[in-house]
Length: 440
Image 1 (cartoon, rainbow, N blue to C red):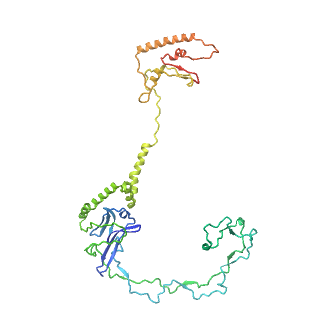
Image 2 (cartoon, rainbow, N blue to C red; image 1 turned 90 degrees about the vertical axis):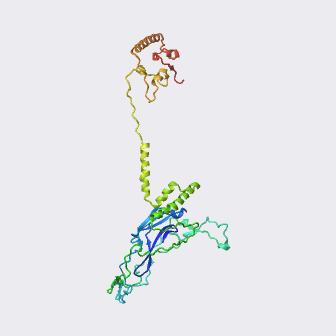
Image 3 (cartoon, rainbow, N blue to C red; image 1 turned 135 degrees about the horizontal axis):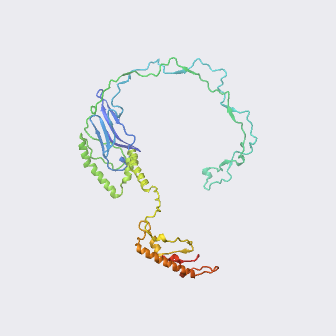
């Protein structure tokens, strides 16, 4: 017997051998050991599946579903009960002797109940030494009717009886030892001994647990693969189900695994591809991730493979690409010893809030290049530098003479103008200058 079987939440793929004992001619069933976990996709997805059984001449068997191995074993050792019968069995004709005593302990018949043993004494008695607590209130009841309770509107006294408010704890007894009629508590009776029974002693006639003697098994034989298997003369399907649309087809029994694989390629795998195409076209496919989850349900060890092959590389790539990067150290070294306009520039000692200098030549000189560094002008010839220095010296002397002519009284406030700004020696380099008072 071979095939799927599902009952409730559990499922199996049965493999049952019927083997004939060559000694006594009896035929017994031997069930292949099932794996502990079998996925439920074979029954829940409503798709076509291929169940394959391979039994080799050595007794080895293997069960696969859709070309994937489900379980395997050997019919000589991996079946229940064991195919090889025991060499010795208990003799069914052996009977236990009448005088065989299996009692390990017996009652002491010589024991006598003591005279002071009273079996009528109760297990507990009232504590005569107990006294009522000083704060016990006997005038109040421990439980009272709930004053806030109201009879339901749908209460029918003919059907439900007389209505009574539910009971609640009496608030007047809160913090007290108790309310109501006081009764002395009970304690364990020191005279109580219970019903007297005779003590037990070791049985002097004890002989141990009796078992029938072992004899050689008259039906013992050494099984051989296929030796006791009856030939297959017909194929039958045993089915008990309440599910609809269950079909069986393409049943093949052959002695060639190659022929079985060829028939599977011509029938099952063709139909499986068409079912996948139909599911994808109608949007009923499980998808790639669902197939991964289904695979792990059948083989939980695949989770370790997924973590090692997918998760760890992704974490390593993320750390390498998006990890914290160190900031580059700024380079303050001068890149060239060539002359530039910044070498002759006078530092601006005026507060930024009072003055703002906008220079055409300074913008051109200090404008950063494509690499982020400042671009320096090309060095001039020695003759041009000499002419420029002489011109600058003549302009500076003229500017000093004009400054001498412009005298500012001691108490007169300075009022910068555009004309005075143009005459300033700081603009000898040709830069335009604009001044403004604070607040403008």
